[in-house]
Length: 323
Ligand code: SF4
Image 1 (spheres, protein in one colour):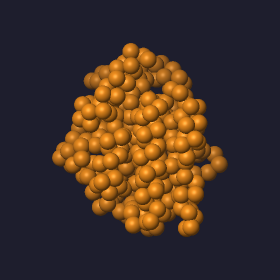
Image 2 (cartoon, rainbow, N blue to C red):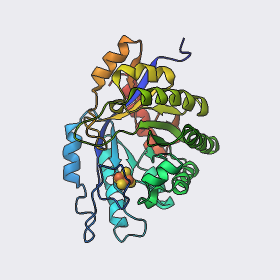
Image 3 (tube, rainbow, N blue to C red):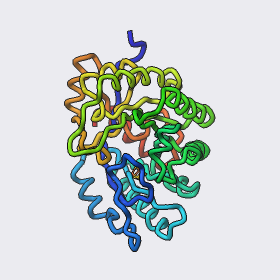
């Protein structure tokens, strides 16, 4: 017996990229573009392009704003942040809910976005020498800064998504230590709604299969994460980065969420997204129900600012009715 309902959730999502320009240079990144020093926001997503993308995904309730980062002291930071605010407002005006993941934010920026976004996200990624090596040229990926962001979100009462990038050469102890830090922060603030366990997948023209030994090791880690993190913290696995034939094993180990699913994964475009229909069919054959959710999980809706709460409650009710 599983001891819990055989339900796994996902969020119908559309991704908007405010800019790919990023001052970090993470070794593994296939997403970033080098910003033009004269005009770092030359590629910034305008409202018209954003509306076209939103219109092409009418079923998406979540608008994931995934952005390259502008340094805190940059003269362009204000314009960059104004884009995040404008795109969040646009999402709301279209009857969707924004969820922004744009790197570390100042307290004022996070508070402001937290009034427009029912949830915000920032990957912790991990700790230890393997991550230090990958982030040599990524100033905003310092562990202390990421942990401070999680704490800041907790103090502000913002429902938060974080996660680990797994399989970059870290040890099992590194993985445990990272999960325990997240558990500790959640124990203080109760705001970590989900932890993404993201297998690292190499960029390239075509996706590579996940080696069997890596898959086995990640299944053990999922079970360990389920033991370390309290039960209200959802465990998420991106289904395009994981073999479909082992998906049920991942759910049995503790995964209960498949995250936001758009038609393309803009970070890992070589790994095609399965459709919700294909996933639902596969999972139903093993006795699991795939259920849609909002970007904010139900248990965190009550703590949202009043306007966002009313909107999320109404949308959650419609989802519950299958609308
Ligand atoms: S911070 Fe994100 S976008 Fe920037 S280089 Fe690193 S992974 Fe790429």
